[in-house]
Length: 258
Image (cartoon, rainbow, N blue to C red; front, top):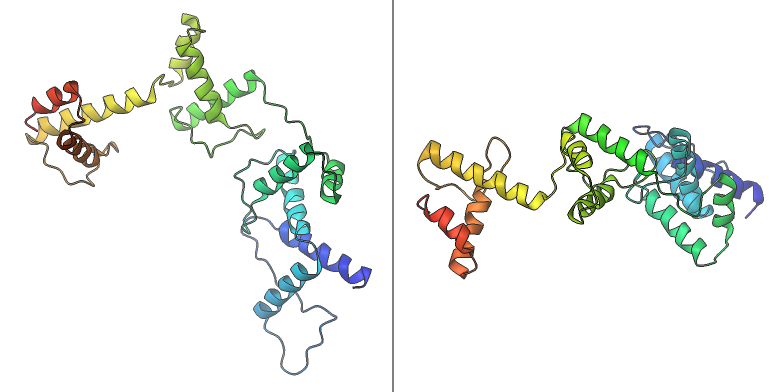
């Protein structure tokens, strides 16, 4: 393969990988080296064939490098969250993570060299505690709680949910002053999510019983506040049948005529 043909395919593949969210993949012209005679080639067909040709002639990494350049242009760093997927479906985060793993195994291939030239930081630097606390405050101000999903990352690529779990563990280990506790509770910290869910469900049970006088609900019934009351009632009945219902739960539900 000629160098010019390889370079052309590599350049087009990087451009394809770097396209913006919502941007169409084409149209791409049919490669000049592919001679087509007769009727004009439809644009969609030309785009598909051109993309297939690029992926055949150039290494797959070129598309990832294009996407990584786009990510750097938008975020100002190369700390791609591992779950990050591009608009075109490239699992860019996993690709970067795989490269980092190879680097730490002592492998220095062409991809590693190019990533180094781009400014890749191979030794991860965790965000400062101050930055993570700020991120927690921003999350609370935006969503009104700290039930952070694991798919949510800070601007620096850190997983905020891990930090929130660390805070809860430090609380259980009695590492906080009352001032610390007051601060976290002021931005919606729930120290024991499991206990909070149980409290919310029990309140939903009480509210439904007070309004309707019974606990006869479909298994898929959800309250207006989002509590999965039907599933909870069904699980409670199953636990009673299996003999695994606690005495406390039995007394609570039995008092409501379960």
